[in-house]
Image (cartoon, rainbow, N blue to C red):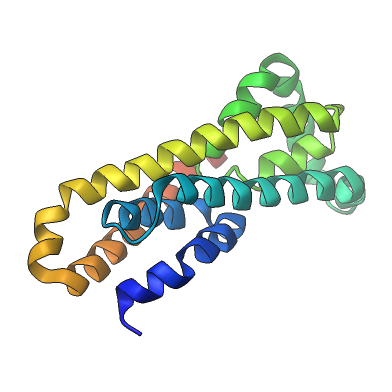
Length: 186
C-alpha cells in the first residue's frame, strides 16, 4: 500500500484518535492532506472535533470525580487551582471558548474546571462551540498551508509530503514548548 492510499484508508481514524491525544499536529496534517485530495475537509473537521471533545469531556469528568483527591495528595497544586478558579469566575465563558487555542491547556483546563462549580451541561455546550471553532481553524490552516505547498508537492510527490509533515511536526512542537513555558511562568 502506498502512502496516499494509506492516508485515504486510515486518515479519518488517525484524526479521531490523534484528536484525543494530540489534536494540533494531526489536525494540521489532516487539513494538509485534505488539500491534496486525500481526505475530505469537512470530515477532517468532524473527526478532529470529535476526538478533542472526547478528550475534553474525559478530563473534565476525571477532574470532577478525582480532582479533590489529587489536590489532597499534592497541596502545593491546590494553591494554583484556587488561583485559577478565581480567574475563572471572572472569565469563565472566554476561557471555555478559547482554551483549545492555547498550547498545553487542553488537558489541564478541563480537569481543573471539573473540580470547580461549573455545571456539566454548561461546560459541554461551551466546549462544543470552542472545539468546533478550533477544529475548523486548525483544519483550514493545514488546508491553506497545503495550497501554498502545492507546487512543491507536484514536483516531488511523496517525499515532499513526508518532508512537509516532519516540518509541521517540528514547528508545532517548538511553538508548543515556547508558548507552554510562557503560560506556565505566568
